[in-house]
Amino acid sequence: MKKIVIAIDGSSACGKSSTAKIIASELNYKYIDSGAMYRAVTLFFDQNHIKLTNPKEISKALENINIAFKVDEESSLCDTYLNGLNVEKDIRKMYISEKVSEVSAISEVRKAMVDQQRKLGKSKGIVMDGRDIGTVVFPEAELKIFMTAEFYVRAERRQKELLGKGELVDLETVMNNLSKRDQIDSSREDSPLIQADDAIEFDTTNLTMEEQVDEILQLITSKIIEENSLETQKL
Ligand code: CDP
Image 1 (tube, rainbow, N blue to C red):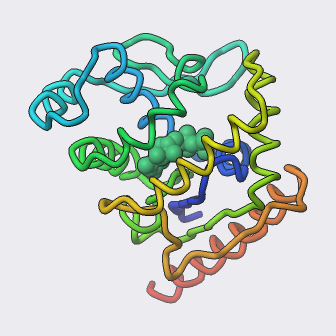
Image 2 (cartoon, rainbow, N blue to C red):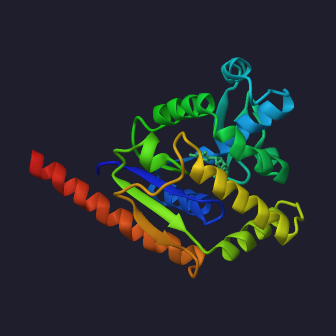
């Protein structure tokens, strides 16, 4: 069976990562959370007091950043490692969410992350989620999904997710963060969050996780069948 690249883009908290994780495990594909990479860079910049206005300092810092993903044996979840340290919990904290969009708008940062993301996707059989996966990282991806959900639903989902990780944040703070990030992510000059022309728009507002995973798996199955029949025709 031919392996494909699946790109899932969309704004924060519309269910991209949770869906992508389940889909990748169902298909036995690799899952890469590109947002985690930008969050890890943000953590490094914060810890090392990197000035976001100094391109030289930024480039130097990027040379010292190594990001990896490893599966935690106990939880079977994929954790993010920054220079050998598990930073999964830290990068999800609100103070990182407050800074990540500013860091992600820096071209030097984007170039370094996109290079790594392309390497990870070389052998196909990958699900990657983010903001620019279908437009910039893998414009040739066989399947592109652009996920959306109503703003209030996204805010409630994110608040619940943070609470599940032990961080109690009031809804207004979550809403302010989401709308600020939406604004920065979609208006930045380098690789803004936009729907690729050939992406399928997928609204998760009224869907349960199970429903959205089922519907997306159906889209994937049809795409894989289509790709395989194209392969056969070529032979
Ligand atoms: O988890 P959530 O949906 O809130 O965001 P994320 O996927 O963890 O991404 C965090 C931030 O990283 C986004 O708000 C973007 O600023 C940036 N990002 C990006 O610029 N490009 C990507 N491919 C993925 C994330």
